[in-house]
Structures are given as structure tokens and as C-alpha cells.
Length: 177
Image (cartoon, rainbow, N blue to C red; front, top):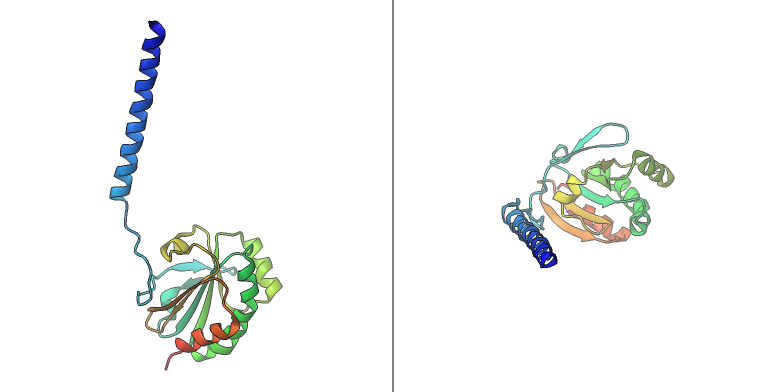
């Protein structure tokens, strides 16, 4: 009889813990802030990130210019393949009012600096150390690119590697008139 009582007590405790866990999950889901999805036509959320030289880059500082906002990581093969093309198009469009801002997803300064040096990148490269910007921009798969017009509106969202001709056409699309 004593074993049955112990078993009943243990089962009751386990059941109570499960009920509490389910209740907490339901409460957390119901009260959590809604993440607004970024879509074509949305205003691009502002952010400030620091580059490898310690300089701050704020998206709103590019108001009046088109922005090619690229999210990437050093371990991402497609990211690495598209970087030389992004760099060439940055050189072609930077004096025409289209800027490139490259956001690395939470890697070390050392890893990112080695990558930048190896590919001789000339555009600003910032690191999203806390992943707060990539979360705000709903970045899942890499590479991910948002093309932003001079008014700060998202005109194109691309997931995956972009070939150079498309990069040029996207930059042309947001070039100030």
C-alpha cells in the first residue's frame, strides 16, 4: 500500500509541473510582443551597428540614397561567392547615390576581418553581435539582401545568392533620380 501512495504523489507532482509548464507557455505566447514582418513597401527599421574600425553606421544616415543591405556569414558559401560581385557593383554605384551596407551575423571581429581582407572588400562591413538587427529584419537563411530606396522603403527582399547582373539591376532600381 505504501508504494502506491508514493507513486500517486510522484504522479501528482509530475502532472502539476506539466500543467504549470503548459500554462506558462500559453501565457508567454499570448503576451509576447508581435514581431512585425518586413515586407516590400515597408519602411526599413533604423539601426546602428559598428564596423571593424569602430565607426558607427546608422541606416537612417543613408536617407536620400539607395541602400543594398546584405546579411551574411563567413561560413556561408553563397555569401562568399556573391561578395566580389557586390564589391564591384558598390564601386560602380557608390558615387551615384547607392550605398552598400554589409551585416555579418554575430561572428568575431577576427573572422570577419580575415574574410574582408581575403576578398578586399571596400564597402562598410558591420557586425550584428547580438543578432538584434537580423531578428528585426526576419533574416533566416543566408545570404539575405534588402534593397531600400532613397525614401527608406524596402523595394526588394532576396534570399539566396544573387548573380552580378541582378545586383547591378537592383542598385539601378534604387539609384536617386
